[in-house]
Length: 336
Image (cartoon, rainbow, N blue to C red):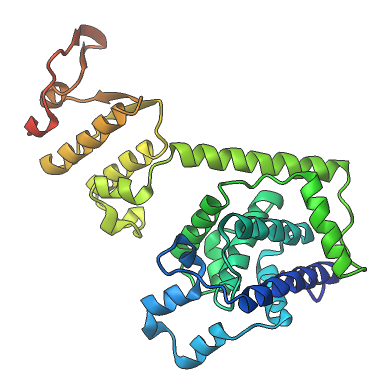
């Protein structure tokens, strides 16, 4: 059973303090008449973008509500609702504020009536994944904030991480600085200072997350580009059970190449595919081999063997021949 912030006054007071700080930032940005260029990446975080793209989804009352200048209680009420769903810790709120100030400093994105909800939401999502032992999937947050689909939340999170340069690492001194600032807002600030054990957890977990994010960003391909290359972009939102056998095989190939592996072993990769799709898959594997990946294809199709740099023939479990192919065929020349 979920407990609300009313039953956990410590977290409620932390949320109130963080909301007070963010509301002050919002008023400052509005006074400076800051805005976001619709052509910039920062526009991802502006609800105006989604109003313009799908005007039929918003009546006048809803648009007026989104554009209304919020009060501190509006911010704290929104975070309270997220807490009721996610049950994040008080420390998560402090970490959320650190990440928000990080994106403010790096991008100059303003916090405005139509940006504060997306910014707070995505920073809390990242903070909880870094700090709490248990955290919700992005799809769960779309139930409390249905303004965004799960796909849009994933994009927002990715864009947020890109804009903070995957810098999720938080030093103990940084956390302490924010802790003391929040304590100055509320003398009865309920969180205790971190002890040696939580200090080590903070630095270790935030550093591990940063290293993993940077590693994945460096090695991962764009999912949509990979799906497009295997002819499955239009099926991006389908479940495996909704795909044919050949389509499922293409999904397997797409998954295999996403991480730019050092060695890629493909057992009959074109076995259930028509010639045209098979050629596209072979081109994709060939491109992968140009990116320092060793691609090994097991096939009974002698036509496919002719495109390889080296052909090893095996019969009855024994190597029959091992030949260097000095003049491999072009993939477009292969048919079956």
